[in-house]
Length: 189
Image 1: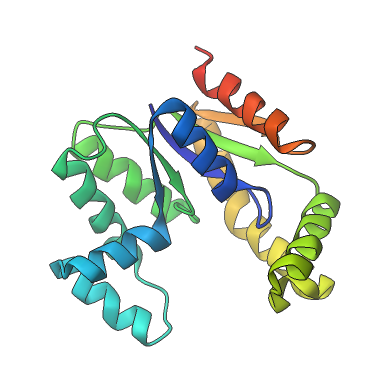
Image 2 (image 1 turned 90 degrees about the vertical axis):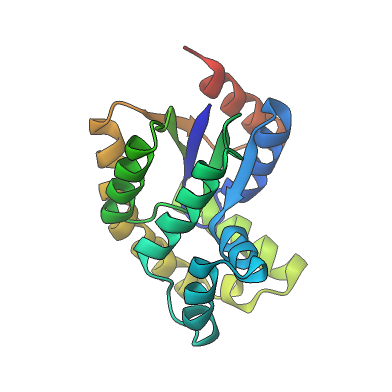
């Protein structure tokens, strides 16, 4: 089972991806972790990515797709995976689709963890207090992040709907209930 988790900041993508990966014996791939691993391993793509990361710049799409392709080609992902944090734009989604197709692979589902703006603000405010994250404490900053997310991500949601692989899951309520709903949606034929 090859999956992509989508959702706004604070929707629980990372938390739920880890939980579902463990339950379904899938590999959890966070873009940040992939980049750090490629840099640590000193791969050719990792060296290129490092120059962007050290300059505080976004790593170009082709490098991220290349790093994912290295994983696909290595056979490490043969038993299935969850991509968390990628793709974020339609060009990234198209590049991912094309690369997977080239490697005789593909995505089974794109899972949208659906939460309201109010829920995101509540969760990020709580996270700010618990983890001391200043970027989550300012409601106007959070609202701006939500606006950016909507502008970037709505086209991806439409893209995966056209690909007939989008599944929306209610991401509100108890964390265990959300995990259960996600697992049900993922394993449902």
